[in-house]
Length: 264
Ligand SMILES: [Zn+2]
Image 1 (spheres, rainbow, N blue to C red):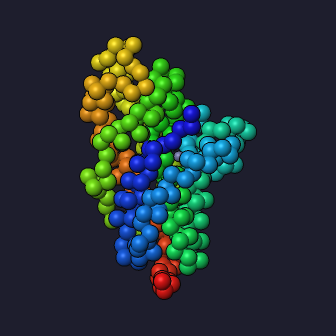
Image 2: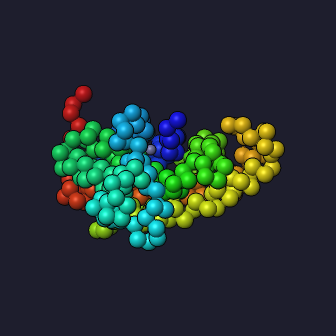
């Protein structure tokens, strides 16, 4: 079963928050197109029949050792771990590539293209904020917690999250924006041990034979009480960082005004 970070709902929430964070200049490009951005925010999860797509959604950090010394380029990744680097994930580099696509889209003057590029960039930025997208133990398979990936990013989100309850600060200009994905990934990775511990603790409330795919109401209550604030925070950060990405792409493109809409 393919891993689908955040599920559809989480990706929609991140897009919604990001558009809400924008100042007038870039915001005008999305007027009337907000729903399109949300509708396409999960598209990359549907591209995984292409074998190269899967690793674009994560970065397994442990093989690189100290999270403070992650490779910054694909050449560095290759130098550290050899030819298997691609299978360890390439999400920070894909974020850089898709961000440049968004800069090009702003330069092209095509608002539909800007909307689509934003949706795709937003997908990978959102994935970088899922703690289990930064670890080789991505589905709890090494700690007898299989399924924790979807319990966290879909189970909790589907049950409890609404974009109206989340907030996001105004997008910020940042000249070093393209270096930021590594900071987000390090911060996400630091959340992994507690996430796994909280899943185990929630599980201790129900007997082993009750631990089906859906878990018991007691499990969900405890897991939400422990991890709910983390889920909310990571969605808010995903939205904030996508907002920053859009603003900085628009600035890099020369702050283009939104072209007038064709007459209907
Ligand atoms: Zn994904």
